[in-house]
Image 1 (cartoon, rainbow, N blue to C red):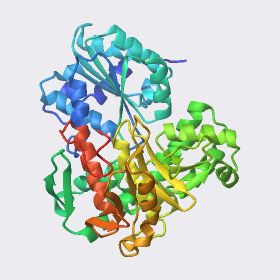
Image 2 (spheres, one colour):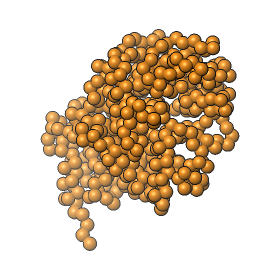
Image 3 (cartoon, rainbow, N blue to C red):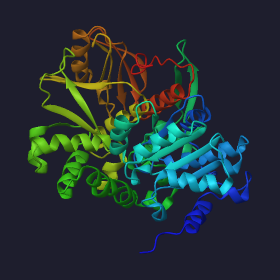
Length: 491
C-alpha cells in the first residue's frame, strides 16, 4: 500500500499557508470580515509568550473559531512576524489523517531550517480529529518552549475532557460562544443606528437607549432566528433558509458524528429524539421522568446524554431553587436552554414577534448572553405560587443578590398583579437588589413601585444588547464594574 509522499504533504502545507510565498502583504483568508469583539483579548493572549501554555480555543460549530485564527495570523504579520514563522493547518484535511503533530511540525522545521529556539506560531485547527491529540500537544509544549501553539476544536466534550485529564498546566482553555445580540447588530451595521450610548455610571456601567424600539425588536427576532452564527449573518441564502444550514451543518454533525464517535453512542436516533424534545422545550421546566417518557430514553442514559449535550455546547442546564433561594437535595426538575436560540428556529420553523414561543426564546436568548461571563452560576426559582426566571446567588453566602423576570410582553406594566410572585420573592429575600428588573416588549420605566418593592422595566431586546455589550466590554479589559441588575455581583 502506498503511503502519502512527503512532497505531497509539504505541498499541502504550502497551499494552507499562502503567506509563505506572498509575504506579509499578501491576502489572508477572512481578513476582510469583521472581527469578533473577543479578538483583541484572544490576540493579546497569543502575543503574551511569557505564559508557557498552548491555547485551546473551544466553542460550538460555526461561531467563528477558524476565522479568528486567520485574523490572528493577519495580526501577527502586521506586527512584523516573519511569514515563515507562522504555520496553519487543519487536521480535518484528509492528507494529514493519521500523522502525528510532531511529524507535521518536523516538516515545517525542515522547510525553513527552524531551530528549537526560533520563535514560531503554530495553529492546529479542528484538533479533535487527531487521535490522542492532547498527548501530542502536551509533548510539543514541553519540548519547544519558544514555540506558541494554538489549537481549535468544535467537539467541546472531547476537548474539555482531554484537556482536564492530560493538559493540566499545559493548556489554557479559551471558549468562544455564539454571537451576542450586540455583536449581531455590529455585524449587520445597525448598532449605532438603533442603539445609542447614554452614559456611564460611577461604577463603570455602559448604559444605552434605543432610538427605535420597533426596529430593534425586529432585529432581535432576526437574531433569534439566525443571528448567533456569523456565517448566517453575512449570507443572504443562509438567511433565507437558516434551518437547512444550522440543522445540517451544525446540529446534525454534532449529534450524528461528534458525540457518537467520542462516546461510542450506538443509538443515534435516541440521542436525536432527546435533543429535539429539549430544543422544543427550551426555556421551559422539564423533569427526568417527563423527558424519559417523551423521548423514550431511560433515565440513567438520559443523565449521560444531558452531560454530553451540555459539554458539546448544544444546551445549558439550569438548576431550580425555591422561594427561599434554597436548592433541592434531589433536583427532579430543571430548565434546559439551547446554547443558541437559532437552533430552535432551524428545527421547528422561524419565529415572528407574535409567535407563541417568543417568551421562551427570549428567555433562551438572555441566558445565551450570559455564556460570555465566566464563573457565574445562575438559577431559576419556582414554588407553588410563582416563578422567577433568573436568580444569581452570592458565591460566599448562597443568598440571592439579584433577580430578573424575563417577559416578551408589556402586560405586567399595566396588570401589576402579575408582579405578585416577584414581590413575594423579594420580601422573602431582602438582599435582592432593587429595583428588580422586569423585561418588557417596548416599555422603559426605571422607577415603578408596587407593594413596597421597586421595579425597573426595560425592553428585552435592549436588555439583551446592554447585557452583551457590558459583558464583552468587561471581557476586553475595560474598567466596567457593572451595576445594572444582573451585573453588579458578577465581576
